[in-house]
Length: 374
Image (tube, rainbow, N blue to C red; front, side, top):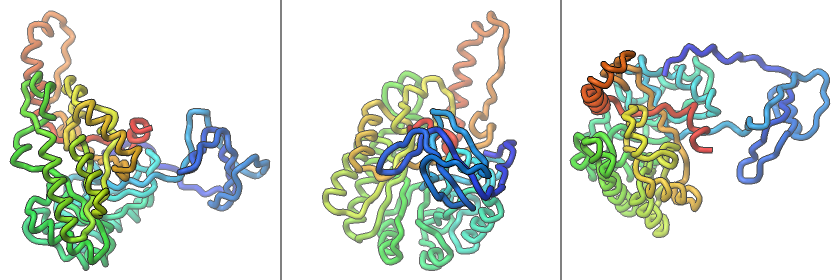
């Protein structure tokens, strides 16, 4: 979300040595206390370096150096919701979290459903000049689920995938046709899998926690039923389906089955789905209100195993910031009088529950992903 953080100093040093910390070499190993010698922006040597003209940056042991992360799924909120985020603030936040390339979702206002808006996002990203921003276009016009966008023109404009994220592609005929087009253009259809008739009015995972809080729950089948539908449509069409923010064990099992059948499917999850559970929601801290909902410990363990065995292909942040009034529409009151606090405890609890019900779903992700996921 918009930040008062001072901009990163964009200054290129001809000679630079990064010393100490831990170097992550993807797929290979972690090297402790490396010297990384950089000349004119290019890594020249990994090993002890003694260049007197170089600027030396010393890291502590707990700091990591790695290639820039890539985020497949984030929300930059521009156009339409710039009080919550912009392309500039979002890409700056991404850089602060270690992400050098991010893919932004089209659930803006208006939705990114035409080449003009694709070019607008690209222009805003170029002006910001922080993380590289790749655009995901809408599947349907205005994300209304009724009429497909002109996908070929969108691909020519530079979209890397299509999605109606924030909403599912609900009509199976539309999803089938989108997958046929995706096969032709060789890009994925990313679906937010949610059967809306099952999730209607739900604000938390259906289970012991929802019952304890007295809140309307959302069953995990609201996700997994649509995952199965999309698997079968992908098998029928040969199109590439990508399942967004997988949150439950049932979906993991279905994706594993599909991959064994050779169906063209990929999937992502998010750090909060393998580190947090619905028990975190007992606090009624609205930062834990996300879509899909946080699930159970069993779901967390299944997702961790799916990351290890390759059933789930990637970790995405689903960075989804909202301004404070959207996350806490009923601003909590501060009470210093203990007697008054005890007297009004029930009223405060009811207000917390109402605040949770009305709060927008979403969690900031860029600057928390590494800490949660490592």
